Image 1 (cartoon, rainbow, N blue to C red):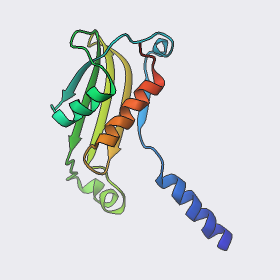
Image 2: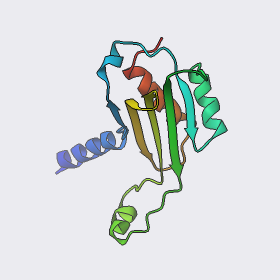
Image 3: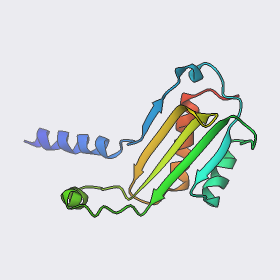
Image 4: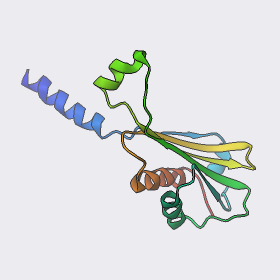
Length: 138
């Protein structure tokens, strides 16, 4: 019984520290071919997010590759079907999405994470690090 409880506690610790982000690479050629530049777009506009991202990468106004960052905070679920899930678990109340597109049409990469708090500077840095770890940049 003690071994079971110890195992349960250890497994719970590892599950609690899990990164719940979802990353999808749509065009695998960009793991070998470099992306020469990125243009930045944040929706809705957020000066703090923009300042954080501009510290991480030298974005250019004229570039065919676009990093589109979208987020939402204060998500509430009014559905009765989700009420038990919301009260018994950590139902997210915000999200962060970062996508890289070429010419606004071709989706290259997507990063998405549900969050329990507002989007923080660390969330943005981790998301952009994830992108840089998976794609090549000049």
